[in-house]
Image (cartoon, rainbow over all chains, first blue to last red; front, side):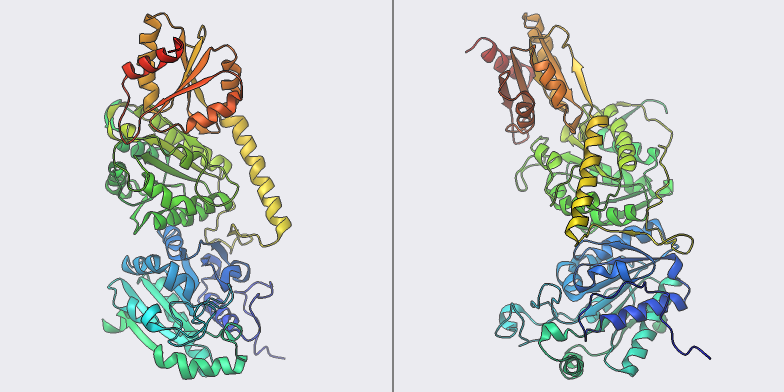
Length: 248
Length: 351
């Protein structure tokens, strides 16, 4: 009998706390598989953020540090600067990274910190019950934009990958999604590329992953996948936004 | 190390490096800039890490990360900057991380001013972060003592896995005095709990302040409180000055304690038997000793560069016993010995 698939050693046996239908689980698995495949797991330090993935320090099977809301890139800076030979990554949602932690992510990229950031963008605050995030789409209904996001009052959604790509210090930036087998494979390749960049000492890498929040969006899991394709991707186009390695 | 003339901020920085502090994360703010600048100049060449953070918030979170991964680490700031660090200090306390925070205090509230003040006693000893936590606070009264307390602070932080603050008024930060530094690094037990990326050779470590289970969080808090009681028991420091025959007791810390010593000299010449208790740790506070001594005093006289913040702790110590009087200046003004003599005499003569 041959084993064709098994659970990665990169995840613990603790059951996920994510809602059924949420794609956080897939993203966790991809990060874990990449860490295992690149043989970085045993020397990795992950930084958990605040939001739905707050418990990720229970899930990733490596040393983990739980950070204050938005501060994961600063915490990662403290770890990486004092332990430059270790693999350091943050796992952050859009409320954490694009709102309260906007300064920390911009300056970590600006300094060219040799860390990898997994940025999960589901366009909503899931953990706190579905409030508007900086990435919430125009006209999208949330509990704090009950009539739909009014861009004249609440601004246009922030495009993090595009913004960070303009910063000289960033090395590799790509936006992916995990809505079907093809996009999952692409996401994994991107995550691998980001960790390889760190391994080679190239500097700051960030993979933005468009992810579902079927509960927060008030739709079925299948419709949530469709919503990413039809509504999120047109505003947040997939692709590589920065690849200093390719440019050289 | 030979005695050298150093500015307080620089002596604090050098004392930390010599003691074995391996990383500094800071942000410019007056009147602590020389500390940050000294670190910029010498931390890297000493094999350590220096990062000028984008904010005090980021700086304390870099401290959190470096400490969580096992580095002996510090930051420094001044009053409004310490306010911004309170979130991170609470997280360090919750996750039980050793770290040194140096506060060179200035006048407030708000932007306040840049001259020395002691209006941050409550900020330091009560903290502005959330939750039931304590931070040992050391208050030096000279450059030499500042250097010694930085060393002591790092030791205490490592020993108890707790953030520690050195609170110095702007005078200590800015003035120059001769100082002799202990050249030996402090001895620290290995941080076996650190998330330093070695899960391949041991069980994985994680550093965390989140406990969603109510009983687990209560147990964690009980554990923290037991630690704080041990710190109170073992780490309370104070200086007693001319108290053997005293009928009156001054209470002052930091620079004002030196002004009080001059006033005490003058008052003794005038025939008043005056002494002083100078708290060196503001938390834990020497409540018990103050209470014991208060019983032999006609009154206590608290002098601070604030509206009376340590005053409240002194009142807690004596309860409804011996009367407690107070004199303070604010805004960056510093009282002279003559002012303390005059104010003391008002109370002593019942005027």
